[in-house]
Length: 414
Image (cartoon, rainbow, N blue to C red; front, side):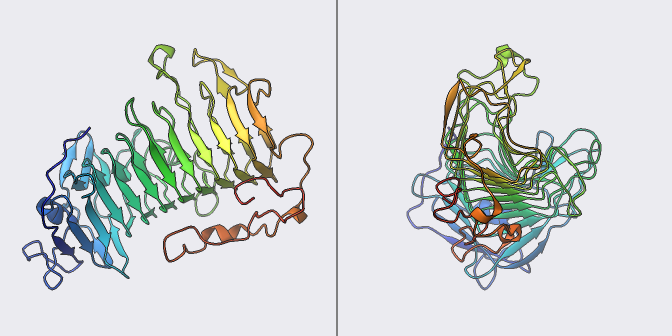
C-alpha cells in the first residue's frame, strides 16, 4: 500500500492551459502550462482542470527518469480515501497531449506515469507517444503503479505505445477509455508485437483491477493482454476489434482480442500460487487477426461469460497448459456460459476439454446453428461510433440477436 497524504480541509482548484505558464498563479485567468507543475502544488481533494486544445509537448519536457523510462508527466502524489486528486478536462472541452517530439535516446517513454494512489484522471487524449529503442522495448501512454485510481473517458491513440498499462496496484478502475491505432514500427521486427491497447501485468498482491466499458481497435498486437499477471483482472462490457493490423490492414503482431492469461516461458516454480482466474464478462471481439477470446496457454481456468465473437480467425480458443508450463493441452477448468460466436474465419471454438470445466448454453455447442438472419445488423462500423455524452459505449444494433431467433439469449447483447 502506498502512503497516503493528509487530506486538506479546503480543496483547491488549479487550471492548466496550452498557452499558460508555470510562472502563473494557476487560476482560470492565469493558468499553468503543465500538469506536472499543478501536481507539485496539489493536495488530497484538489482538482486540476485541464483546458481544451492541443498541448505540443516539447522534446525536453521529461519530469523524471524511472528505471529505463523517461516520464513526461509523473503523478507521484497521492490523494486520500474520499479525497482523490483529480485531473479533469475542463467541462465541455477536450485536451490533447501530443507527445510526438519526445524521443529520448535509450529510454522507453511513459506519457503519464501514476505512482500515486487515490488519483482520478478524466476526459483527455494522449497521442503520438514514441519508441526510439530498436531492440525489444515498449512505451506506454498511461502507466498505473498506484492503487485506488480511476482512469475515465481517456483515449490513447495514433502513437507507438501501449495505451493503458497496470503494472502494480490494486482496486484500480479503467472506465470508458479507448486505445486505438497504436503501432510501434521502430523496435525489433517493426511489426509492433508489443503494442496492446490495454495491459494488466501485475505481481502478487496487486488485485481487484477492473476494465469496464473500454474499446481497443487497430492496435498492432492485442486488444487486451494479461500475460504474466499474478492476480486476476476483470474485463466487463469491453470491445476489441481489428487488432493485429495496421490502418491499411497489413498483418502485424499477434492480433488477439482478449488474451486472458498465460505465462510465456516462466518456469513452473515461479508461477503464482494460486493461478489467477481472469474474468471476461459481457465483452465483444470482432475481426481480430487471431483469436477473439484466448486463454493463451493459461495454467488454469478463465471465466468467459456472456461474450460475443464475430469474424475472428478463431472466435473462442481455450488453449491451456499443464503445470509444468511447457506442455500445451486442451483448456481445462474454464467457466464458459451464454457465449455467442458467429462467422469465424477458421473455427468457432478450439482446444476445449469439455469434460473438465463448466460449459453451458454456448453457440459453439454442436446443437446451435446460426445465420446472418439471426442478427439485427452485421455492420461492424458501428463499433467506432462516438461515445454517448456520459462516456458510455455507443448504442448500436450490430450483433444484437433478433428475439425469437436462434441467437437470442446468447452473448453480450442478449
